[in-house]
Image 1 (tube, rainbow, N blue to C red):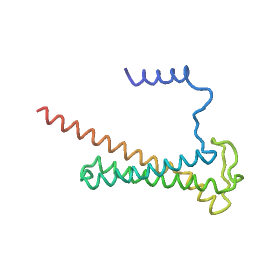
Image 2 (cartoon, helix red, strand yellow):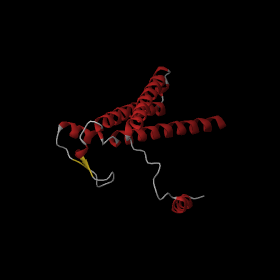
Image 3 (tube, rainbow, N blue to C red):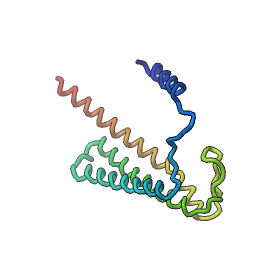
Length: 155
């Protein structure tokens, strides 16, 4: 199946089966939703720290692919810290600071250091996107290495 056919199938399936209401949208209202979400950030930090440490201790970082994945782990730890702090701060700033709907029209009135920090923390994608890019590059490097070694083994 060509990429064009796959794209056509995805668009067709979305139009046919797409939801009219986003019921699975996750916000963090109420303390239990936010607590569970914050705990997930902490567990994610611990998992990435363990993986990055394990890669280093076992010498995997001598290979380019694993080294890139380790960098991804560090960026994901940073992203989790930024997101965790942003959620924490969101509960402490006045509700009047944020206006509009949670779409492109939503505004944050930066009128204090806390709201300025909150605004900066909402830019967490500046950390998460490079983390995903490093992960992708690491996996691609490992794949290419495996393919190259496989070809050598065939000879």
